[in-house]
Length: 385
Image (cartoon, rainbow, N blue to C red; front, side, top):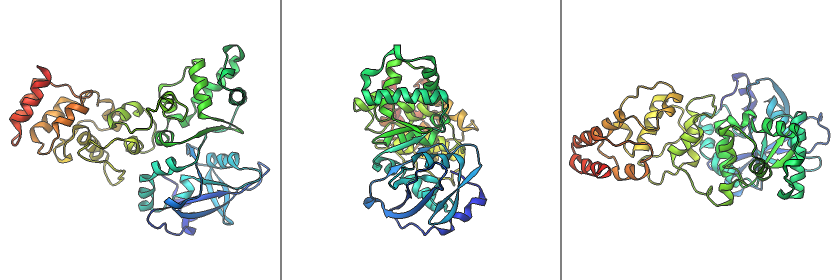
């Protein structure tokens, strides 16, 4: 999460959050799309917030800004967020939202770290998560109208005969929007109780679009499909499989191609969904860590060992690192087995079987461990005999 330095000044009106607080944005009603967007901002103890919605959107590469008003003071937001607020604004009632760019003081690194660490709680508590995908086009409008018909008439309305090429083109456009390629939106989908997808002036529930994709066999990018699989209404949600957390390695495999501005966010963006219950160490977002230190922390987590025994890595980029976790290089594992004083080998064998390949060289390396050499070598030997 980064902003232009010239925008820092607009956060000067913010008062500091107390421990356990978040800010919520009251988006005031408006009837005309061209009417100025007027808002107010309030702080709440997280446990005592009134019902709110948490916006999920892609910040966008376009750095052009538009002005909104907060407490009567001009506040600049990127064009994408401006359009999202314009589309979400209700004609007669104020809408209470959590919006990262506005509700987090982007000058305050301590606050940013604190609020990032509670993103999962913010989205889990929200009564709904509106997704803004961008403005519509002829094909997307046609597809959204088709989906709205289904939403109003039920899933039984889905038939191949009623879908023309323009609807299919629109569905594929919607599901290939940049939103579905971003790493930071993954946990929004995972924790949301309800999601509504907005494309231009039209909106449908995630449940409707997921069922349409399933029944019409719409071909979409694997990363987009992985996002849909986490959303409310997905098969995994319907079968109760999406309520539990996931192993770090699985998440890194599923979302390693997701896009981020900071390479470290390929790790940080999924941490809120990770099951750390069997881990030797917990990874927290920490932007003072170098990329290499973070990669070593991931290896330590996956190998159930202390970070200090992870050797220097030959890979230099995060993409290269993530591409080489299936399996983890035995050169790395040999050094860990030989030098670790705290490794939980039983857990590694139980939970890491998918990403380690045990051979004689690993057994020999384990046998050289000064404290538990024979024990560890025997454990490894049993897995291959």
